[in-house]
Length: 365
Image (cartoon, rainbow, N blue to C red; front, side):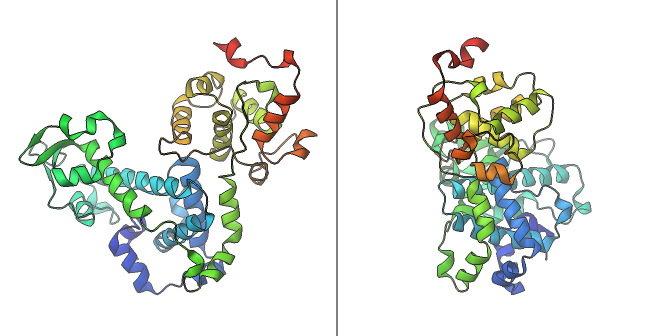
């Protein structure tokens, strides 16, 4: 299979390659093929980190990488969880943007001949019916244009009104029915095009398709694990931050970071999601994580990700998920009565004496 298809599995040619290969997804699931493991990683990294790139690209051949995409779409559909499709599609689009930027940077440096999996800008534009709509402005460094022009109808089709006033047509430079945009702005528009293609048709009724029951049953364990990342948030009127009353798992993650230990992505996600869940804003979380191994830029990115403006907000993982990742530690009696870290914290606050409820934010400002 073409390595380009593995890097850009939502291209029409990639979809045709899968169909022509005559691979039965039900057989892959029944065999627990490597593509299933990669698909699970694909969705998990989308939910936890906003990317679908493999943690170790060398671990997967182009065939497994390509086939993981349709299986990932099945997994997301089977999850039947609010926000899963949105987050997954955004992660695929973000990964596409990063890969395109890397491919074009290599092209600018004259390295295309060394990597057959790269695409050039004309090919990417053609894939999304933009070949005649986008033109680079002539510059001295013609191989690395900074400015482009895009036809107004296509600009309006891709630009999102939520991106801010600077994206409104009234504030753009217009000439001859074209909008002037910078390279990074073009990347953002193309990212939107990928998002729309990925999200199209998701979620779908897997069991209604031929062999759907077999596939759904075969992926039940993977779906349960992924769904655990999106545990339904139990609502508490939490307006007090008392680290001493955090559940043992969160205390341990904070202590590890304070000792300078490196938290793996799933642990960092769980800790940040818990802090967001109890009502802390980004600056407060950064302040709590000061003098720890947690990186401020990463915290700010992750809290923004957790507070997605489109409404796909994520809670902290459940106790079962924390346990599955080895983060459920130092269990106490209260742990035996709850199924979620938020439940633990709400209960601890309710049982605390008045003098135990001194808000950390009042002492750390």
